[in-house]
Image (cartoon, rainbow, N blue to C red):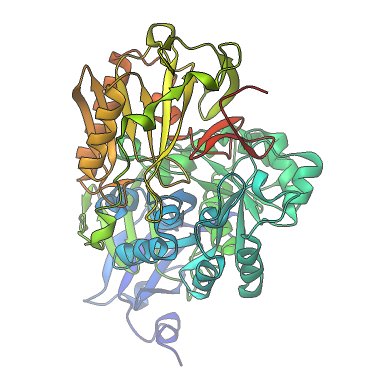
Length: 572
């Protein structure tokens, strides 16, 4: 007989009882008047009345007139960008989030399998569980040669905390061979998932993609969600710092029901994490969009648990981990109590947990050292065709288009013209095996931006991006080098705003509240210097991201997303 049965049979007292609440039974999609009895960090029973197992040493949580639900699960996020999670997890926990499924697209591109192992190590002692996916990006060869051995990454899929292969942009995998297929094959053998990034993927391309991936978080319309579910793809809605696509979940809900939909943040950055919340906000948005409260909660609990093979969570059925959330109002999804692994960690605005320190390997703090040679920032005049060169045009959000421009000429060089909104864009390779050099091109649509900025917090590649004009470009890059990564904004040779991100060049290890303030300072400085893009920091860090069309930066040229090839400055 196991240690839960005596409590279930009323023969021994429970360690913890959550009493008097309306308990969500996500399997049935209903709330029941039950108590929750916990023994040794697991749910022992859901009795109608737990008086028989309440003793002098039993901790009792009063949930009268409140909803009791399993701990929330973030079905898709990025913990290795912007902020080290060990310094921020308490905000997620206070929102009722007890498990997160994270990509490793920040540490992975530079450090491969070691990056995944360090994320797991840094989060292993937190009272919130982190499950990770193996990043395919280091094995992708669409625009640049692959940087990592797929087999080394594939071996990680045997780890119990690895739930699958991370997001693959459909342009890399549909209709072409890729080294990442070795990851997909290993995932299939291990019975684990493959995450898709299907922005703009539909019709026959989506059907081809569905033969590879198990879930996708990129549907931005109800029709897109329905199409994914019809093709056997688990659809993950999101509300977070990148996008709010929960309206699409509401639109699709009546047709597809709740069972094939999960909810996620896709990343809640420091400012939003501190000011808005975490998965509580996502569940609230789903309810606002017409999803029944029991189903909205199921999308943040049982569904992601089942999809990712997290068999001991997502439900309060006996035997599951005692991850419990008490909510006093389903309209606002106001979380009043959180139990993680059988321990009360948050109750009535008081928390028992705090940020934790983790010491990363030395090379994680010394991962940014790119070239500041003047030649790296030049665009030779002979690259032009009748004065015109290819350029990226920022459109909105993550979307950037292809265009041609006619930059001013100074001697043998083409230069920026900030007054007309024509800026230099330079991407330099900071991979440990790289030489610190890269590609210089042009960017429009960002605004009449004076000065320059540089950042190592770019998506899916180990690079340093610089945008602006003149010597300020080099000054900004040099300052990012000096900080060991992060953001730097420069005006007339002076650094006017900075945000260090010294952990792998992509994460701040400051207190999350300080990181949020510095993000505000960088965004404000970009605006002051003339940036008019709707979200300038998002626009810049995603200039390397080929998951959204149409022209992006790579180390050896522009990445033409639809053609799936690298192109140069000279228009064809």
